[in-house]
Length: 217
Image 1 (spheres, rainbow, N blue to C red):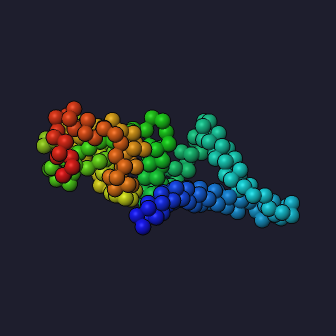
Image 2 (tube, rainbow, N blue to C red; image 1 turned 180 degrees about the vertical axis):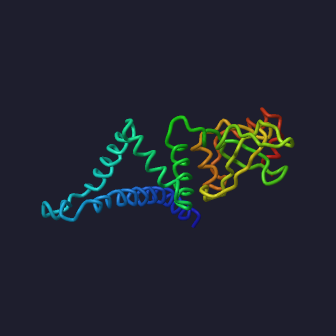
Image 3 (tube, one colour; image 1 turned 60 degrees about the vertical axis):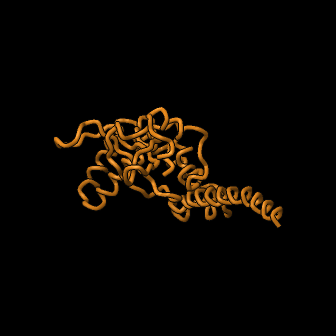
């Protein structure tokens, strides 16, 4: 019975990640393929040619992104974007959503973004308990005599869903940087701490003179 259970788990470990990958990729491709609905009905391949072209919507999506990027990269396009953003900036609710979405997208997609560049540990939610987090802002100034100027903003995600979490503004001296990639940090969180990269947490604690047993509290 133990052998059958082992084989069953081994089989699930092969097929579950593969199935999840296929489902997610298919979902993204189907979403992109629906871009064809942006075309007038008479321009769509099924009406113009008498048959549908699989993947035409994906090609159309890429073409729209390229053309938009080319337009936004030149002076005339930048002026149009500024005009469009100034119009959206006058609409209260839309302004908040648009600006937040743009800031997040710019941070993630541009090469000079500083967010999610470091995996760190800090004592959270209280002393003696350590949490894994990602630096989202390397330097933030708190306008008060009670605080110093050398603070970092750290996003502490929840597990196994890392899209929600807590924003912590912590002194740089309280934040321990780990020799861990962003991908390794995300894997550690999603796996509920089961997948631990070899060495970086313990080595970083020792290097910063923090007892390793404290991190396991």
